Length: 289
Length: 292
Image (cartoon, rainbow over all chains, first blue to last red; front, side, top):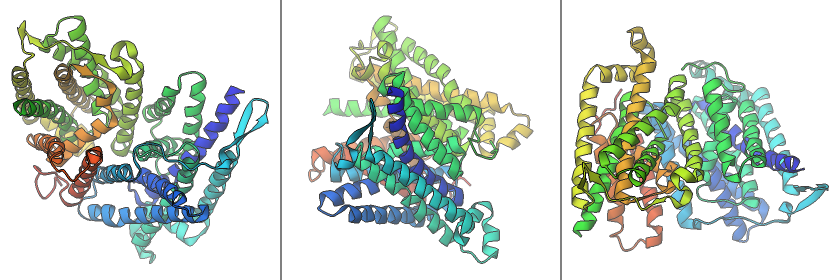
């Protein structure tokens, strides 16, 4: 039963990872920008939610506030950080360091505003019920799984079936040709950032009501998103989501063999193995070295 | 006051060695390692163990630290040979995270979260150099040696091959450069020097624990190199001075509550990194037009 219990919590963690990583992969796939500040988006959304709920606002309004802040932050990163850098140099590392700087800034602002301790919202949703003898599942598990499935299906449909979605996929392939077809690369990259950042919100809210948030969560989420998108194949939405799920499950299952301290390290060992033996990831195309 | 200044100067020198060694990777080899604190830590643990179990000789401890860090740098060289760019950064982040867990769990070698306590004062060839002034001189000498070594190496054939690989790996290969060997050597050298800095750090603090070797430390050292200017000799030193003096300066501003100083510092690091990347990507000591 222990394995099953760990699997359940692994899938719950994995669903959150999958959504966040899918947002990261969406942004990277369309714009080729390694949006390291995605973890900061996650932290901002989570803390906005906690702040609004504690401030006496209802849940729907708090979720909306988190969504607005996340999207606004994503768009601002695109407009004020990535675009100026790409205009003059655009080397990968310059973008990386700038985004990392923003992540540090966001983390310290949260520390000043909310303190270093855990921030969480308690709800009856997280009360566990006995499903089978010895197997406890809280309602939030079903919420997380449902949210991940529905949102993932919606984003996939959007990318496959709508003009805008096809435009987004075209943006990564050939921006020049896109312009010839009369689509604006700038507008599309804004859409990618807005949508990708929005995908971080459900995970942030779910984390706020389950394990709670810490200022350092942005670094943690950033690492997981990066790891998931590498394991899944950089830029592949499906791969990132699956890999996110995989990382969540591995982190939790490892507890049955090793102490809990090793759980996040186990995820990174998986990552390391992928980079060494299959750098193109689960679904990636072969990449140049 | 003198003691305070000596303390600041010694720390700046140790971090100068560390930043110069990272500059070898980031600036000259184009290998963006986010795991430099790991090798700093390996050196510190190795140096501390030598001092506690054998003799507290600085030279011996530094050599042992360099050997340990240099050997284990293969963990970094392996992904560096396989992948580039984003992939490598992610790989090094992964290495950093795994290493932190190992550091805090391998109690026998690292003392876990409690760390290694009671590292004896340093000696050199039997001479006691535990006195702060004497130890600063030793550190300065090591820093000078490291800078001189990097300068000579980078002007020679090894350095030129390395920079050629950084700028275009395929072109360097086409000219018959042994790319894997040169890259592995560069990684090994950079990490070994980080190990030396770690050993000096361990002697100076007389205490090491895992807190000094976290991702934050890696980022701090990276920020020092980048803010100062990559691929320049003076850049990392400028970065070290700026980022070490900043905390010292901030504590004089009385309107910031002492509990928030850490967060304010972090905020300024972040802001400086972002603004520099937008307006001056080559760093303070770099050419104003950027490298390309």
